[in-house]
Image 1 (cartoon, rainbow, N blue to C red):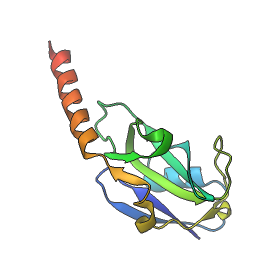
Image 2 (image 1 turned 90 degrees about the vertical axis):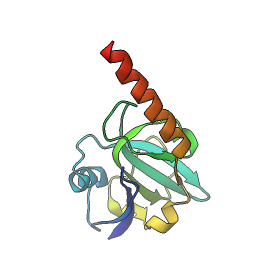
Image 3 (image 1 turned 180 degrees about the horizontal axis):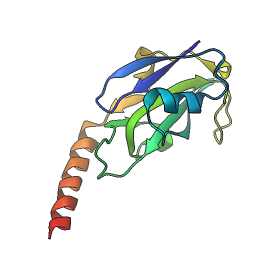
Image 4 (image 1 turned 180 degrees about the vertical axis):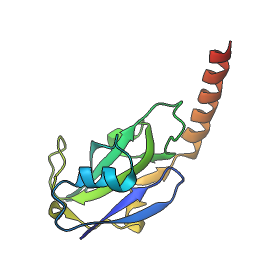
Length: 138
């Protein structure tokens, strides 16, 4: 078993126990989170390891926008639903490692280092969404 962290849209960090003999972590995560649109988004380097990001891309006007901001190349990305982060030593940023045995434990308390609740950005998104809805009504 390997521990991954699920960052829920509500703000809660949840520990996920991925089975040791899981052949494809993405397929397992889609089932576990009930998010068929979950995709590999890329990796963020942390010293000698890589934080692998699985999330569903979204738009400002989506109902279930995840209010968390990720560092690195993901700081301007918008995701919906839950994000899942896993820790890998593989530096290939173009692909994720399918078997769960390729990952190391990444508990929620460690994950906080990579994730910020973007309060300012959240407020700006809400204002932008409100303005877009008003424009659509006209």
